[in-house]
Image (cartoon, rainbow, N blue to C red; front, side, top):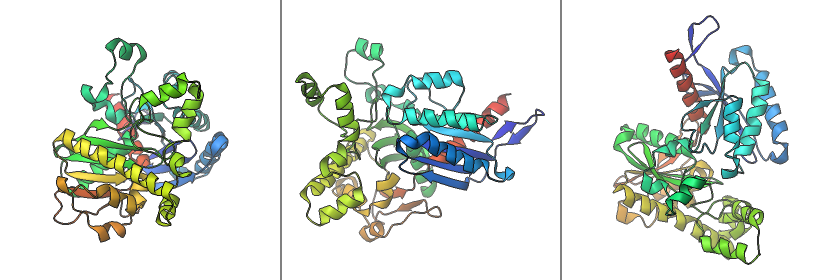
Length: 393
């Protein structure tokens, strides 16, 4: 992990600023890539329309740090990389123009990421800026998991295929599980359940993504915070054909008004769980549908891989909701899953304990909770990319 200095010498890359910009929040961390630890961490939540101002404020705080903590590179998370972007990519005006052409595929995420990139490049013009892509990990999808059953000319003409998302964290989960088990990730079959406001399940066989629940856009798959997940396309055709909703209204319905929010009136699983325990039928239905969809994908992916060695839960709900982990793990006894109920109920993750198991000793399939750390993964990928460039210079 190196960069080339002004005199042509090779120097280790030590500090990478990772910016993880979502639709309504910005997470950031200054990472010491040599030690894999955070030197500084700043999060801004619920920024909404004030995203540019939030990014400017965040960057100003990093510029105020002691010179010994100045970032040597900046890396940005970009959700959709399309067909082209499969590796950490150094950003320039031409690359940004290509990424902008993908905005329609991830309208909630790519535009804010691009806005943050422009602000960051202006604020820190003297360091290299990279992008890493959520879709990149899924570049290994086999044809039968990547394609839709549509005519070939339609698929080729419009670039229709399945891309998958949350790849940065799914890859992190796979390597975390392998390290915990002291096993080679290439010898493991892992099902990773990323359960946040956006949610996806990925089948990871030998360290490679071989199937995933999200598709061409982040709309496919699980019931999510505000997204419907799998819906019969005929429903959408009927709503469009009969004039009930136009294309923009359908987009708003599927991306912002469905999922847990559409079922229960909120996308906060903590509130839904509390209300369900108090007898709220809408919340009970929302949880039942949410869990049922996850279990369906777990079962399907175990069948597709011919078995599974570990099932991992990650992201906000996966890390913090013992109820969701328990209900998703129930009824999987036929696969050799045995849940340690007290272990699950008392499980707490932290920076000092980023992974924990909650399966019983006799369980043939290990159950894990893994702390999401997209910022660390992004920083390490950037350091590796800079090191590779330097080595070849």
